[in-house]
Length: 114
Image 1 (cartoon, rainbow, N blue to C red):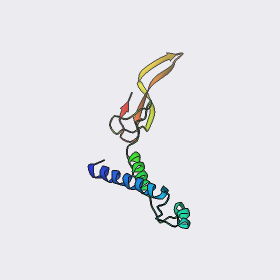
Image 2 (cartoon, rainbow, N blue to C red; image 1 turned 135 degrees about the vertical axis):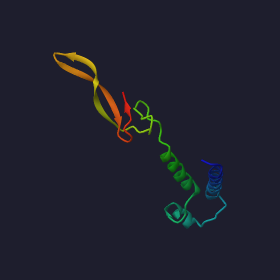
Image 3 (tube, one colour; image 1 turned 180 degrees about the vertical axis):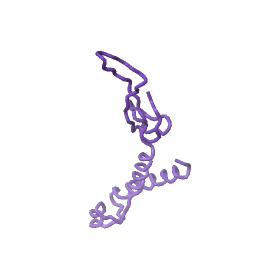
Image 4 (cartoon, rainbow, N blue to C red; image 1 turned 90 degrees about the vertical axis):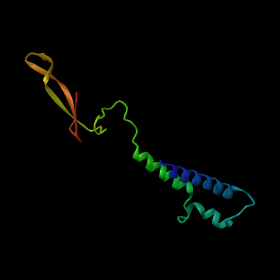
């Protein structure tokens, strides 16, 4: 997040706090009692906190958390792999049946992980 965006978010947070104080403070009425009861239902008013939450959710979508305990492709950071038998490496053989080692091929870029 660049410097401009962080300043905008700080200003939105301060505006949201002031709006909350105005809406809760007794004696200060910016709305009539009838319209104050209808405030949450009114779709025309967008609170800065909602804008802030939407921005934070978009930021979370951009940066996925690191998948712990999963294979990650070193080239494209994908976790989508295809499992294949590596016919060059025999792990075990019994009664003429060979068990081969596994290798994982990234479905996005084709990088092979053993």
